[in-house]
Image (cartoon, rainbow over all chains, first blue to last red):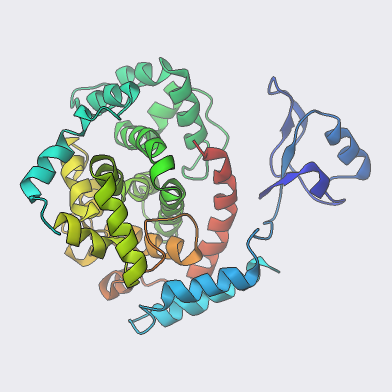
Length: 98
Length: 278
């Protein structure tokens, strides 16, 4: 699930949380698939973000994320299981960027 | 440099209530937590009497840190579902870490992340009390908060040392305090009459093989702490990692797919915790 600003919404995305008005009344339910019409409606609801399903890419660039990871592991890489954990984490982080 | 007498340190930490920087709500809350005879009703009234606290508690119980996302609408319901121990830990978490946002930016996120990953590991191992393990993860670094509150200058020096010497803060703390946040946190957990397992996890999250009463919980929080740091979520006082304890690793026996799935599930929850910035 990720929180997106309204200008980042795209056709076909699905809501991860209902969209409600200030009083808590549900305007669009969870799992609603976004159409261009719905996106326009959401933009007129006076809210600034909605939750959609799936994970958004990290805001930090991939290279920065991976070099910080290297730095974190540098003192412990030779310890048992740490090379394995590092490999898993690198693959995980690569996966976040799709 | 390690010239703070550990007895003086313990005395000052245990009387943290006397610090002028501790807000009044928190002093009242600590009184509530220390009272062994407090009932579910009293604690529920205490929370409900403070609208800001009520909001924070409800946000937390409806977050992925616990098992009922989006379904709890009243403090009463939360207290009954979670039980006294979990609620006390949760209250302490939301109120103490709020104080930290200025001093150690990122410790709150680190704590939330550790709570989430601890819960995911516990579920994967089929443990019966994932909410209790969540609280253990949330509070494992409470000693850091106490040390920063009581000794802000020394703690900053310790953080700078970690940066210079490429070591974790746990090691640098020893130079200035002759003890560590793990022991400091455990003293207070004892004083607050927290359950044995929680005290043990706080004390041994860097040395889980020494835990007598909660070796599995300690191993879980230890590994969760490492995974959250390795992922780069939040900030725990340094930019480095501690090696995983081979005993803890062996005890949990997680496979590569296990860890990958735990990380993926955690990603989803990490994004939801943006709402929990206090």
